[in-house]
Every structure is written in C-alpha cells, then in structure tokens.
Image (cartoon, rainbow, N blue to C red; front, side):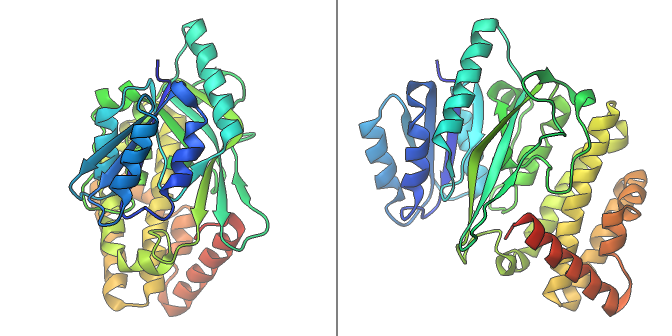
Length: 338
C-alpha cells in the first residue's frame, strides 16, 4: 500500500530537482513519487527517468506538454495511487525524520481503521542568507495528537494560515470533489488549499518541521518583482477564489471565518503588489478588484474591507499607500517570506 503520493511538478528543474526526490525516497515503499515534467527544455525528463529506472516501484516519470504548475498538479493527482496526496515543488524538499513520523502515524491510522481528510504539519522558510530559519507552526491553534474538526480550532495568526507547504490531503477527497487547477497560471497553490476546505471534516496536526520551502532564486514565482510582473495572474486567482463559494452560506462558523480571513489575506497580497508596482494602471486594477468583491459577495466585502487588513491596504492617497507599503515590508521581514 502507498500511504502518500508525492507529486513534484518540474519545469526546467534539472539543477535542483534531485534534492527534492532524494528527500522523499527515505519513505521507501510507503510512498509514491510522481515526477511530472511540464514540457521542460532541459534534462528534467532524463533525470526523472533515471530515478524511475532505479526505483521502479516508487518513482513514476510523467512527461506532458507545458501547462503550468497547476496543470502539473492536476496530472499528478490523476496518477496518484496513494491514500494521501502531497505536492512538493522541485526546488523544495522534505525533512526525512519528519517524513518518517508522518508515515508511522499513517500506519497507526491504518491499523486502527482511522483516516483523516487533512493532515497539517509545520514548514520552514529556507531563505538564502538567513541565519535563523523561520518555522511556521500551529501550536495553540490546532489540537495536537488527536483527530479534530473545525469547531476545535483556535485563532490563526496572520502567518499561520494553512498553505500548500503545510497540508497533506486525502487523495479521494480531492478527486471526488473534482479539484482542478487552471492551466498556465501562477499562484494556484492558493486555490489548491482553499477549494477543498468545505469538504474537510476530520483533521490532524503533527508538530514536525516537515516541509522545507526554499526562497532565493531570482526567477522564483514568489520574488516580489516577478509577482508584480504577473499581477494579472494574481488577480485572476483572487477573483477565482471570490467566485468559488458564497462564504456566508458555509454552515460551520469557524470554517466560514477562516475562509473569509484567508480571502482577506489574498486580497491584501493582490492589493499590495498593485501599490508597490507604482503604476497607475495597477492602482486601477486594485480598485476594480475591490469592486468585484463588493458586487459578488457584498457581506464578505464589508467584513474584509473594514478588517484591520482591509483598512490598512486601503488608506487614501499617496501617503496612505506609503504606509500600506511600509506595513507590508515590516510584515515580510517578521514572517520571512520572499
């Protein structure tokens, strides 16, 4: 039995993808590694096939036409045979001892006839040049060492929202609820985490520093200059999330508030990128985005617009934009992202 299917989307990843694969191989026959070559023009495919030849019962090399990160995740999910599903970007890796702990836990669940919809663990910002690595954990927010539901969750700090790095979903939950990410679009990891949430009933938090999130390449999608150049894609993802659910109809209050706050963070990211671009056309896109939220989810708009985040990001005038930008810079240094 394969406990976890790991999908590794790869595009021109030959320089660094081996580290990601090798870190997961520690899981042995309990894991399945799906290396999805998204139309690379370098030696990515050849490296993937060498891993498949060496570890034929663990590694599967999948070649496809270029469709972007989200499409590579879609293909990985279609091929996944494991009970649980995890995405690992090709420039990231996992901690081997933490992987062992997670697999041990899954063995215990299997013996007890237990399963969960979502397993959450910690992730670490592996930022180039940083002496102290920032760990994002969920202590005090999520119960430990027990299966729990949304009513058992606490108050999430702004740095503690569940990202692709911290989540492992049950494979059938994603397949049955038809998770499908847009092609040729960056930042769809937010959709990947957000879309399944209303279907998640049973969760588990394991306090291990599992995922190592590398930050340092200049062409990386989370590099601020790169994000600004792709602002239209960021806004597209944000609008897709606005359209996804009528949030006021989510029956569980804690889940509803969590999803509203998550959407508030994505609205803030899109808005601050528009502000920091210093382009009038992007400032207009910011205004249009808030109008879009207001016209599509009026009650949610008021909650987000007059939250602390919403007020900070919408301070009037040039001086207001400077303050918003300054707050963002301070938050970035404190949390450790990009």
